[in-house]
Image 1 (spheres, rainbow, N blue to C red):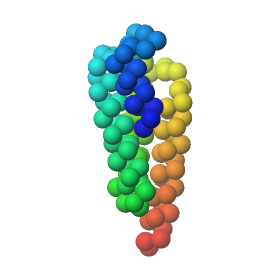
Image 2 (image 1 turned 90 degrees about the vertical axis):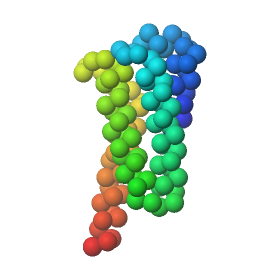
Image 3 (image 1 turned 60 degrees about the horizontal axis):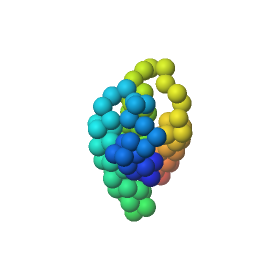
Length: 106
């Protein structure tokens, strides 16, 4: 969540000429990053409140992060970033947590 806020603000102010590093219009990434940050905050609240939709939202947003990195870099041969690694870890954790919840319900 914090990373999305930082990147969106960086695009807004063009910190370190970040706009020149992406393969698509920076405005799209800036706006989608801000939306994803808000959705990650909602997902965090859902997980804290033990709502099943919270885990599902985390998983969807993590998958979105992975796809978004390919789009942002504009190539299939992307640089593996911390964002992708965190997204993969979140997907794995969500998978095991959802499996454990389903196991308790049966």
